[in-house]
Amino acid sequence: MGRIIKNAVLTVIILTLGICTALLVYLHFFASGDSDFTGEWVANPDVSQQAAVTALDWLKDIEAVSVSLEDMEIYMQNLTIQISLTMEQSGGLKGTFRCDILPEDYDALRQTAYEGFAAGFRELLGERLRMAGYTGDTSQEGVEALVAESFGMPTVSYLMSYGPALIPSIEELQAQYAGSGTYEVREDILVRQFEAGGASVIKEEYYIRKGESLILLKEAGTGSYDSFFGQYPIVYTLKK
Image (cartoon, rainbow, N blue to C red; front, side, top):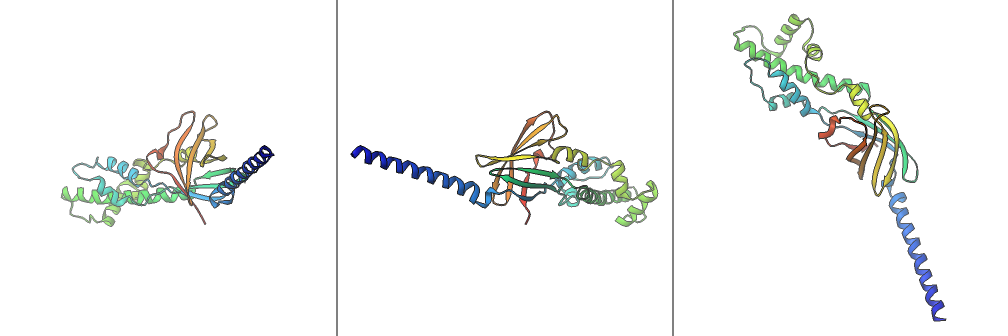
């Protein structure tokens, strides 16, 4: 009789523990708002310093003019590339996603970067002209007029055509980041898989969620690809 009661108590305890465990799993993964990844997420990695370093290297070729990285950083500020990640949860802890870099966003960024570059270029060119004894107008407007007269195009157009590439091309960025695929949550880590840079490259990205942010932890995959943003933290923020 005592054994029967003991077995019954153990059975109740085991069932209770099982129910509690299942409830905790449900609350953690399904009842929590953090378990639903549906929505539009946006990352804005800042490439201001990369553009400043590239511009500085090119401007150093202007003879006898001194320029520092700090000088160029004044002209290259708030240069961010917008990456949009749309996620749709299909059930449980899995779903699909699509990642895009819109051409219009890229064009606006490129224009802003070269406008800053042009301002720095005109400033240094004006300084060089003064050093050479030029007595004409060496203000930004005066140098702009000289450039347009000499090269037949505005400074921004000249630098876009003959200057360095301040940021990667839209094709490079789309090959690296644009695409669609699937995701799943493994032990609180969101893993998304997709083809990058062609069918020969299968890429995996691992993220941890902190509130309304997805933080990239690491990348893995087959094939060869170079990450322009390797030195920049990638953080996606959920848009409301």
